[in-house]
Image (cartoon, rainbow, N blue to C red; front, side):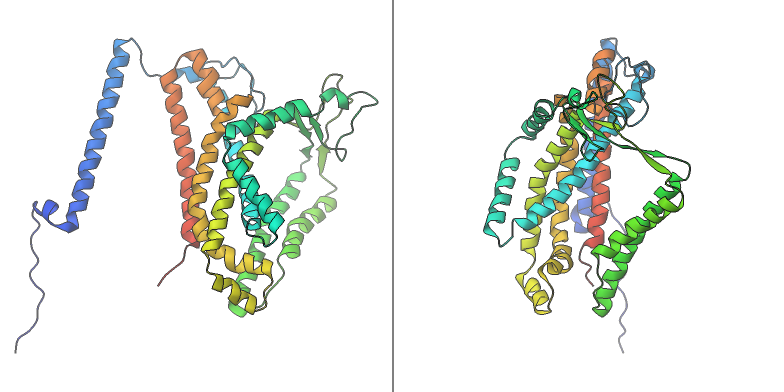
Length: 406
């Protein structure tokens, strides 16, 4: 009686790296990688030799020298006697601030516009289409300049708020809109105020946990719990109770028109350049995100909507629970590119005088020190790191929501 046995394993031979399809792709990739390393090594060696012949050398010691210039808006303490490294850090934080807030606002506007473009109301649909076509087909730099002109030319001057009988009053007694920027109240924390802030942050996580519980309950049992007002109550009520129980440990430092003859004092001044850049980048990028959202929604089969409607779900529930979760798998990948574009477009801040990293490290610091190669290398590394970080986070989220197949 014959028996079956495994065929004898063949020994590995170098010829398999070319002839065997299992190894051929790895061979070509390794060759391409070696060639790329050699090219960059040649370019680096050529650069170093040319710099040596010109009596130059690459050094980053200039970062420890005094900067000698002011920055009109900074998230951390800074003065002109601090180093170029500190000025670079201030510029980097300003870039991250406008990119982070821009991505949030662009996402909110883009989702709303993308959904409304599919509205059955003819007027709303046409208005959203006009918005998308106008903002998508005009360069973002023009929108930055237009909004900055509105902020500087159309807004009232600070003098209109000054004096015992000012021509204008603060909005809600808290906010002043001027051609120099917007003045908003600043929170002043007493020792127990940080406890209230901690309660508020914990309440946000509690609201997220409630939403996940309600969603799981809906999928497991079909029982639909309200989402809106319970989440709002979870976020607001605990912090509000803690605020009054602890004796109101958080106060507001309001803009004071009477503290200075020439300008408002108090509160947080937000420069018009920052607002122009943030808003322009947001509404410009939102036009592209809106098209991504519209495409994602249209990619969901109409049968899904009809099946949800046959179960008695209202249109807003159908959109939130059926359509958007499936559409996200189509929406997220192109939205990652829009986030990256917004971050890189923030380098146009120099056009309106907003001191981001391009204006500090790639502008004033470069001109003062003459270290063009070092400054440009640092700029490239910064934007590369930010782009890779955004891609990594969004790709992780995209992997979490994609369809899991057996």
